[in-house]
Image (cartoon, rainbow, N blue to C red; front, side, top):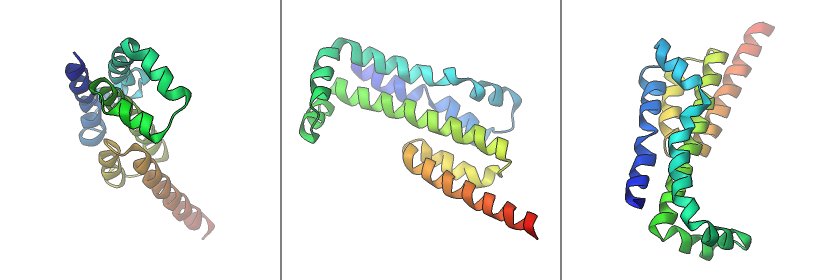
Length: 146
């Protein structure tokens, strides 16, 4: 069951990434991505891995150390917990970037590589998008001042 949850948590987010990266202007894709509920599939996998192991998880996080967290992650259910968490978090960040760049009218060609990075490295993608957004803000400010 844990192995199934591990793979399901990853596969359940892929259609949303495909929509955001490959089909950003398709009306139904935009409608789907606007829903915060797209984060639920990996979240359910996370809860299914966590709940049977809640007591162990609570003990680890009462006094966390790198060693205690590494021990938890070394177990299949712990790795699944992390994988589902990362999938949900990265999708949350990617969804925010997607909705924001549309609102800010930044070209998809600039954002698509950042969304691709976000699939596995949400915090890095968030930082890159922040830099990109800052550049566009600065560029727009300069063009309005001239």
